[in-house]
Length: 427
Ligand code: UGA
Image 1 (cartoon, rainbow, N blue to C red):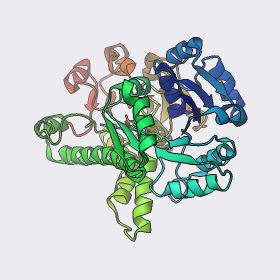
Image 2 (cartoon, rainbow, N blue to C red):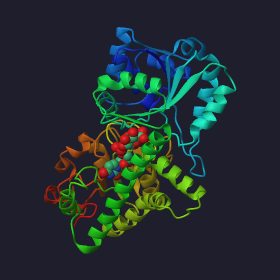
Image 3 (cartoon, helix red, strand yellow):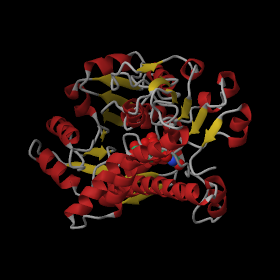
């Protein structure tokens, strides 16, 4: 198939490389000259394990090219995949302006029966507007389909080459056939549903995971208050096959570019349907309150942050990415500074200096440097480099605190070094 993937962000670049690896002729298209120039040289403008290698190998094989020109790419495309961002607007409603702009650019150039598949996360109902926009610019027939993406940052290549399911949202037999054929080599179950169900399924998946995270954080709060241990509690309920043991890490709440915005969208839609106090509004509120509330607790335990030296380890929103969108560090560090702390941040790949311009904040290039003289060490993100670090190397005095904000360390071993250990939902 001749495939054009529009949008060379996270999902776009990974998808382009993966479809090329399946033997298709793929063009990645973006309006950013700078981005395309970099991609032509197999340079990915963000950090994602294994992606540059895959990109380079597919480019060398000749199946993958990049362009800024709609006119060059679109007229030959059998399938156009839209993979641009759908951020939240001020009101929490999804902002579809980038999807609309792609559709407006693509429409006059499509050939007869092109499939336009939307990978961007969009709400059910979006296709009637898209269809109207396309029909206003072309007379040829076309198909709209939904192809929601379920990859996770940090393991995007692996997730895309070995997905746990591929969802095809379409009611047209020929489109379903073509999209099935395209994805069959991935060996994953193919779930064929209506476009609306595919779109809603994506929102439901992300919101459910966000609810799980909020739930485990609230259970951790109770463990903290009643003397139980969150790890043991997870062990107890996780043996129930309906619940399972995975994806239950309490911490600073969920971040990243997907969960916060997708939960907000469901909250917004619920409000539009007359439900002002939906579960989704509550989850958003609890997640937003999470860091300030936890920090108040920590403040009491460490005897205040004023004039303290604090090391913040892990600045990205999760490990194996340099993405800092809705990262805990962006909320945590300004609050620590407000409370009078001097903060040194470290991350293997990410930086937040462009967002935090305060002379009491600096970024350093190693865990050792960040922890030098630190009164309090925050282990925020579970990068392997951080969780496998030997913290006895930076232990100085018995008044030092170690805050294990993702419960990645054994409290015994940290206490044995000499630190005062604080975990989440632990004692
Ligand atoms: C998420 C979904 O997991 C993907 O399936 C989906 O395709 C993607 O959004 C998307 O919509 O594009 P991602 O945002 O990359 O993927 O990251 P996750 O690993 O799911 O983590 C999201 C947030 O939840 C992070 O802040 C993470 O630290 C937090 N989290 C995760 C917890 O606090 N506890 C957990 O147990 C798991």
